[in-house]
Length: 510
Image (cartoon, rainbow, N blue to C red; front, side, top):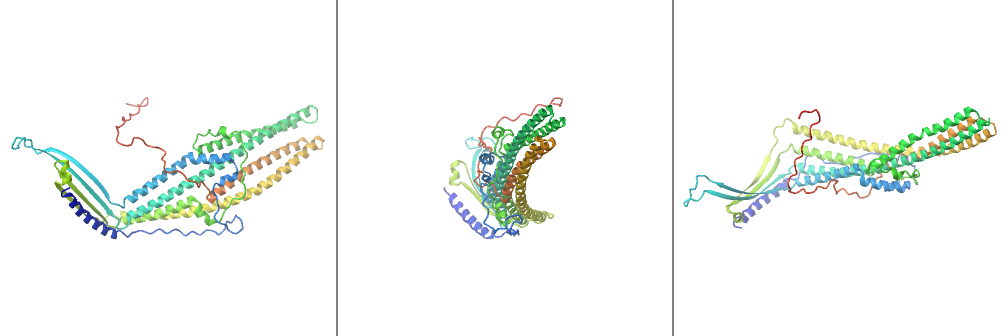
């Protein structure tokens, strides 16, 4: 190897000494160090149980408490096929790659180069034997550079990227939480519209039979034409509400289909056979307000974004300080490739460089102020997310409790109206009351029973809202490593044909 190895050894020793000295210097940071915010929350829920606080609520697979296998399957399918989830996965991959880039900036960068040059010095064939004055030179070398992170700008950038990766994962969890809740909500609505539509059809058929009986009674002189008209009108009024229920049902099915990553009408045949309105089993554990800070992924993501914004102040602040870089290169030249190893000609150079910001018209100071303002906005966004989370839990708690009370009263109303209709029919058959009382009884009973069905839907919906507000979502592993688009033939290959411009539209100049 000739002179190459001794030169490399000497260069390595000098570089090592500089790197050690630089490493000792590169231990300080500028900008504020992140401190987790101190958040004050109530000790108990205002609308929750008065019992003593319990451990953090276990909300894993909470939708199974609705006891509906079809819903369980749809949730799994939505997690696998939803496009918002796929986008959040891509954001996680982006954040992780950004972190790796930030880590790479802390290390030296080394590049290699090689060249071969063939030329003529000019002057014709001037050699002693008439040979041509041509030459060939081969060159190979290494170049290394390292920006010494004296004031911690690169470390702050790595810190920010770590927080950003954490936030991206929490945002993926937030998307999954919203997705599971939305699938459950629209599925419950679809089953509710199915039940109400079926009930409306049964009621309308019964009312049509009543109208037919009334018509026969009119022919026998026991009822009037007005009674027939009222009975027929009541049946038509009930039937008139069916199309709106069917429209709402179709829209709910379309939404569930899209949430699972399918076209809107995909699930229509699957759900057409009907099913009961899902009913929650038991009470949902709510824990204490402090649990929300750790259970809600949107709150966790907001806190991570606040931490990331804090680290970025250090990045902007470090730009106001001097920067030091070390660079070095080693080159060897020879007339033949084999001469490169023997080192017929070796050159090397290394040393530090210093860059000092002297005048920039206040841009760097303004950049720090921008980062500080963004940090404040992130902190306020975090505080807002906490308040919104607490509000959503309190709203869901009171809504669920009050709707359960309302449902119990509606059940009592339905029983009362059913008894009233039975008595009205007996009195009408005995000639003790008018047919109008029977029609009023049928109208009131239908309205009460329809309201009871809707109340059952509302109970399940508020139950779902409470689970979402408490932070219950998909807590199983999700594959974030597999990209949506897998590129092929990305190495060197022949370029594809250039795309041709579209032809001009009719009437446009060519």
